[in-house]
Amino acid sequence: MLTELSIRNVAIIDKLQICFGPGLNLLTGETGAGKSIIVDSLSLICGGRASADLIRSGEEEATVEALFNLDGLNLLQNSLRESGFDVADELLVKRCLSRSGRNRVYINGSLATLGQLSDLGRQLITIHGQHESQALLRPEHHLLLLDSFAGTAEQRQQFNTAFDLWRRMSEQISDFDQQEREIIRRIDLLSYQIDEIRGASLKGSEEQHLLEQQRLLSNAERLSSVTGSGYESLYGSDRALLGELKRIKTAISDAAAIDPALASLHAALEEGYLQLEDTALQLRDYASRIESDPAQLKAVEDRLDLLERLKRKYAPTVEEMIRLCSSMEAELDELKGLSRSREEIENELARQFDKLKLQGAELGDKRRSAASLLEQLLAGEIRQLAINHAVVKVAIDALAEPRSNGYEKVEFMFSPNPGEPPKPLAKIASGGELSRIMLAFKQVLPEGEAPTLVFDEVDTGVGGAVAGVVGKKLKSVANGRQVFCVTHSPQVAAWASRHIKVEKHIENGRTVTSVDTLDREGQVHEIARMLAGEQITGAALQHATEMLDTALI
Image 1 (cartoon, one colour):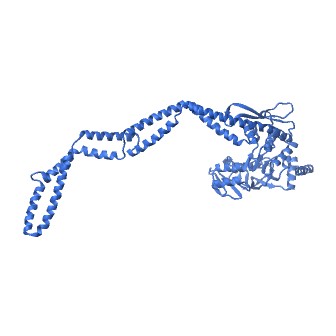
Image 2: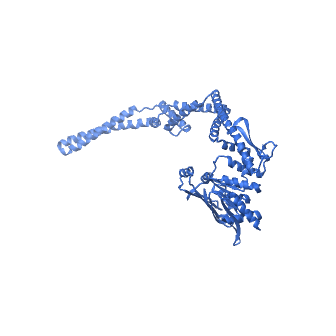
Image 3: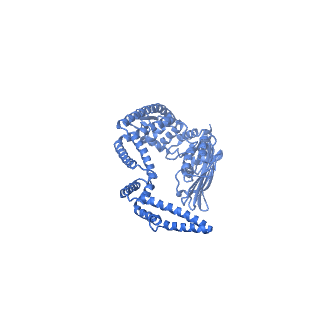
C-alpha cells in the first residue's frame, strides 16, 4: 500500500507531500489544479516514460519519492531480496529526472535500473488512465479478460509452449531442403578437411625434426669437408699434428729420464695426445657418415612445404591442427546425427500437432464454460450501474488454424437496449457505458492486480444517480485494497475513505499546487462546491451532507 508520496519540481508542483490510506482515496479540485500531475508522478514511480518537459520551468531536476507498506506482500519482498535490495516492512522508491538526461532510480537507497523499477511497479500499482476503458475497444484484449476470469493461465501457457514447438517444426519442414543442402555442404567440407589433415599423418614434434634434417642435408658437403679436413690435419697427413705431438712426447719422455721434474709435463702431453687422437677418430667417423643425398633433401623439403600449406589453411602450428581436426570430427558426427529424412520430421510434426489440438480443445472447453457465467455476472453488474436492460455476449469463434493463444477468437458483444441484438462493443458502447463496463469487469474478475489501483477520471461521461452507483462500485473495488480516483463528480466523491483536495494558487508570481486532506466539514464544503460552483448555497451544503450520510449507510 502507498502511504506517502513526495513530489518536487514536477510541472506546476514545486514541493508537495501527500499521505494516503487504505480504501478509496479520492482526489478532487478544479481543472488544471494538478490532479493529473499526481497521477503522472505515480506513473513515474511505476517506471513509466519520463520527459524533461515534466521538469518545472526554471529547475534542472525533478524528483518523485514514494513510500510503500509491504505488510503481507511476501512474494514482492522475496523478489526484492533476490534482486539484491535491502528489504524491510517499508519500501522507498525514488526517481530523479534531469534536464541533462542523467536520470536516476533508487530502491531502498540503492541505485537501480529502469527495468527493475518497471518490474517492481507492476507489482505495486496498476494505473487505469482516463482512456483505460479504450482497452475494451480492442478485441485482441478480450481473450485475455476471458482467460483471466476462466483461470486458464497455466493451460494457456502450456498451449503457447506446444504451439511454439509446432511452429518451429513447421518452419523446419518449410526450410528442410535448404537446411539439408547446407548440412550436406558442411559435411562434405568437413570430410575433405579431415581427410586432408589426417592424410598428412601429423605428429606434434615432427616439424622440428624435419627442420633439423633439412639443415643437415642442405649443408652435407660443407660438413663432410670440414670434418675430413680436420681429421687429415690431426692424424691423416704426413705433417699431421698428432705425429709432431708424438715426437715431442717421446723427446720429453727421454728428458724426464734425466730430470724427473719433466715427468708431469710428459704426462700432460700424453693425456693431450690421447684426447686429440680420440677427436681425430670421431671426425673421421662423422665424415664417413655424411653423404650428400639430394633425393632425401627434396623429400624433407616437400614434407615441410606440405606442413606450411596446411598451417596456412587451418592453424599456425601442427599441434593446433591436430586439435582442430578432433574438433571437426566431433562436429561432423553431430551433423550426421542431425541429418534426418523429411519423413521422420513430418511424422514428428504430426504427433506434435495432435498434441496441440488436444490441448487447444481442453482450453476452448474451459473458455466456453467460463463465457456463459461471465455473461451473467457482467449483465448483473452493468444493470446495477444503471444500464438496466443491457445484454452482454461473449462471442467465441473457432479458428481454422491455431494461434499462440489457442483456437478461438473472442469479442465482447453489447446491447444497451431491449430488442436490439448484441453488436461489437467497440461499435455500440458510449464513453459512459465503457466506463461502467470496465468497473463491472473489476467487480467480477478475480483479484490478480497490484494492491494499489489508480483510476483517473473513470467517471467521465456519467452523472447524477449513475455517478453515485459508480462511486459505490469504486468503494466496493477498494474493499481490502487501496484505490485512487481522480474525479469531478460529487456523487463519486461522497464515497471517499480519504478525500484529498488539490488546489493551485499564485506565490511570488509562480503557480504552485497544494493539497489538503479533508475532514468531514471540508468534505461537505468541497462536495457542495462541486455541486453548485463557486457560490456555495445552503441548499448545496445540505445536499452534500445528505450525500455523505447516504454513502455511510
